[in-house]
Length: 310
Image: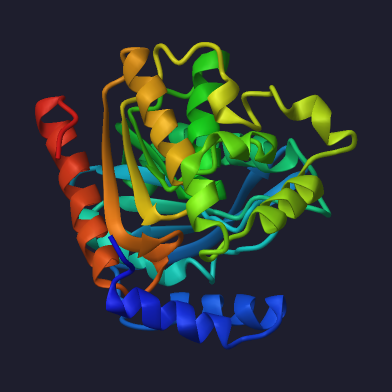
């Protein structure tokens, strides 16, 4: 399916910015464009991390007499860019649509802080939210991880790490076009051959991974906390909803993740959005509106019925 008209228009506008810096600024501006919904309460604070305090932003959509489900959200940006402000509109919209509390995490970025800094920060923030759920009026028995792109990778990794370490208990994970493969494996995926250059490039991903990993980077190719697809045991992981975009180089690796989880007996549903690109959830596209509604539906249905379905 070809790109939708609005997506094609966006790609043309992006290409008109000739430098990577200009393209990055255009993407950031685009993510902040459009409606910015008002919620009941938004609080900036810090929580303890492995190397100091970690900034988080807590979104409470409505005043509630009973605890609300809570989502720990990890932003994208290839582990090297991204912050709470860049994703503020995206998280506000998700919180309003679901009616859930969201805690957006600012983990340390590469190359200043290399692996495992982002992973350990994300785990520490997740553990803090779970342990302090009562103070947030959040329900630790409806505890969700969510992220997009590299943030989707972090969500999947923290679900794996929480299982391996025995705590905290993760009830559900939403992985939005996650990065799950090492660039050395990109030749295995048809989507990289077809859509390289649609928002992200192989060269860019290789550069980001080099910035993220300590030298020699080859030592981490089989590390499941870096490359989720390299995990040898997926059993016992939280049920998952995985979203992909048709015209995304990362599409096939994310869909391979869904297949591996399903084979291991993990309840999982996969939804591919045709005619759109990597990063669409944060952009003012109709597909983003549909995806938010679908995320809300899948989560509410799961916590009502115990079944993962669309």
